Image (cartoon, rainbow, N blue to C red; front, side, top):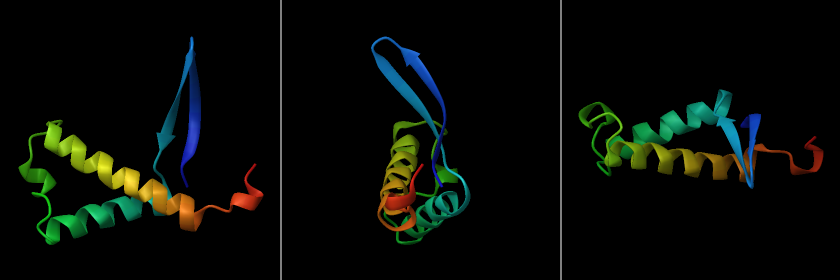
Length: 80
């Protein structure tokens, strides 16, 4: 489940800190593994840490997983 753990208030914006935990983190790792096996991206260990390509790959995988979570894992009717 993705949780907003803290909110930082800076006028006029709010910045939520999102944590990937449990099944969502496992889904992200599975997606990264599959796109590497399919040859869509280079292996993460072969990329320079914090390079544009590395960060883009991680961010897109997390974006996709968070959308999957929103569609299939969250219970929209019983959210606090």
